[in-house]
Length: 254
Length: 215
Image 1 (cartoon, chains in turn orange, red):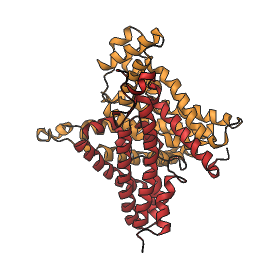
Image 2: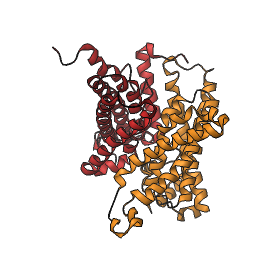
Image 3: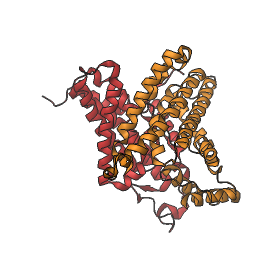
Image 4: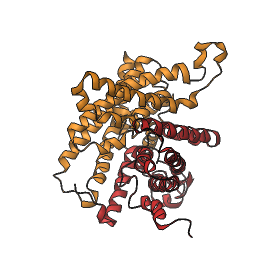
């Protein structure tokens, strides 16, 4: 139970799809002009991530990983098909998106009208493929956790696009320098929001008791490297904060 | 007769500045931001995208008359995924360390919107040679931004370029560091990439006012 909660909050705030790893930026920038459309796309992303990440987890576990084919018979134990994962994952995603579109259109025309136009867009949203690839790289151990990971990273993406859409609706009334208008200021605002989200970094390992439940991870390259950079460059910042940063790193390096 | 007519040359030159995929068309932002903390990774990423987009555009352009339009997205994804697998395997064989830094972002070339965007907008309606030029041009335009961002982030963030110290040694306090210069750790953090791209857009649009958005 605890690991579910931990993964849930970690994927929403610390490894936020948009602010920590920049996934799904294209649709994030293109569809964030109005709050209502942003909500539609965000909901569709949560939904599709919740479906495709567990599916791809099964694929990875029973077909792609080294030795995964052993259930076919002992002679298949040496096969390593992991180089096929890109094509398998993207095929799953594309077909799932198509399938979901057909099913939703048939059974819930109202939902289709609000989600419908976004579904084809989602097949090429990097957040979706990224979700599956990070799931594989982080070696998420069980199907339930994979489902949790899909849903919670979707929620993180949803929060991000909702926030930027709301800001962009308001910023229309501000006097932004002409060359920065539109795209430029959106980038900079996202950067500032990202700095805000960085402060969630020590959330799960902030306390003393948190340090002895480390999260073993193989592929949090960005955040890990950067956290250690922070701890060295901020050496003279507040002592309390430094303690937090160091305990986080210790936890990760364990 | 020149190898490139003027019209063909424009296919390559336009995306480098006035129709840049990142700053004007808003395509392919994800990978542009995530891997630019080091110049080396940016260069490798740029080369990979040049390869995938150049070859992919030609393949799609050759098949453009036989792809049924209803399933074209899946066909395109399969073509891209196959090319990306080639890139990934080559990187793993010849630059293993680097392929670890790039991690999942090589895979994410598949969903890089530049590639789908150019397939849809150009390769489906033009012959192979022009599609090839268009692919190379757009990928180079993407690469230029990647390299600029990578250059500033690595220089200001770690004081190195391609991993070689260019500003002196921060620990022994030589070079610039001897007069009190410090690396800006913020430049390595993810949000810095967004701000650097924002500034590039700002500079570009103040130089070319025709590009300014209405609001």
